[in-house]
Each structure stands twice: as C-alpha cells, then as structure tokens.
Image (cartoon, rainbow, N blue to C red):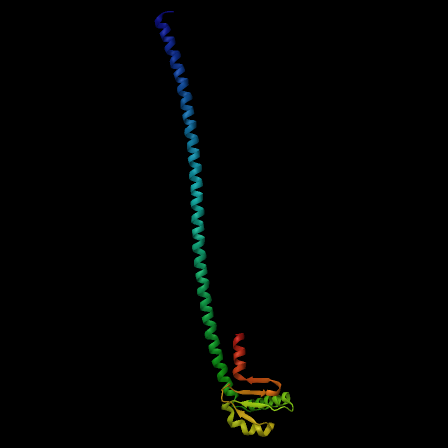
Length: 186
C-alpha cells in the first residue's frame, strides 16, 4: 500500500471517527436542549398555575367584597323599609285608637279595667288613674264603678293605670304601654 492509499484510508477513518463523535455530541446536545426545554416548560407551567391561583384568589376576594357590600346595602334597605312600615303602621293604629276612644265600647273597656283593678285590690286602698283625654268620662265612670278616679298628669294614651301601694302592685292597662310592647315585636 502506498502512502497515498494509506493517507486515503487514514483520512476516511478520521472522517468516520469525526462523524461519529459529531453525531454523538449532536445527539447529546439535542438531548440536553430537550431536557432544558422540558424543565423550562415545567417551570413556566408551575409559574402560570401559581399566577392563575393568585388571580383566582383576588377575584374571589373582590367578588366576596362586592357580595358583602351588596348584602349590607340590601340589609340597610330592608331595615329602612321596616322602619317606614312600622312608623306608618303605628300612625294608623294611633288613628284607630283615637276613633275607638270616642265609642261606647271604649267606655265599657275602661269600666271593666277599673273593676278589675278594684278586684285585685280587694279591701286595700287603690289609686286609679285615667288619661287626661278621658276627663269627660270621669263622672260617669265613677258613678258606674263606685271608684274614685284621678286624672293623670302624664299622658299614657288612654286606658287605665292603678297603684295598690300596700301590695306594691302597679296595674298598667294603658294604651301607650301596649303600643310600646307591640312595637318591640314588630
């Protein structure tokens, strides 16, 4: 074999070794790049998931805040409606009470409450008060019940109040007290 042929064989062998090394290096480089790409994708995916979770939390917070604000506004509106309704109802009841106080049934009611106070008192002295607005009924009620009635200096809206001091009893059958009791249940 001649030198030219030997050089040719050596050249072919070297080129073949260089090709194999190049292929191996290229494959290793591609594998490394693929791993880096996968790692990059995983990191970006985790980062995006974290951002999505944070955004979801922020949206939930904003939504909860809006819902809470709307609930407070609705509760305020409802309370205001209830207050107006209660006020209107109480005004209507006051009108009906004034109408009732000019009837014979009201006089009968006063008579019954005075007799009830006398019955509770028994033989004990009792102070029975009627409202100033009922002073026109005083003489008739005293005659009918045999009780001495006192006009109250404090307006209690009608009805009767009685005090039995010896038994430490207050009988409060006044309309003002009844209205206050009813108003607390509304």
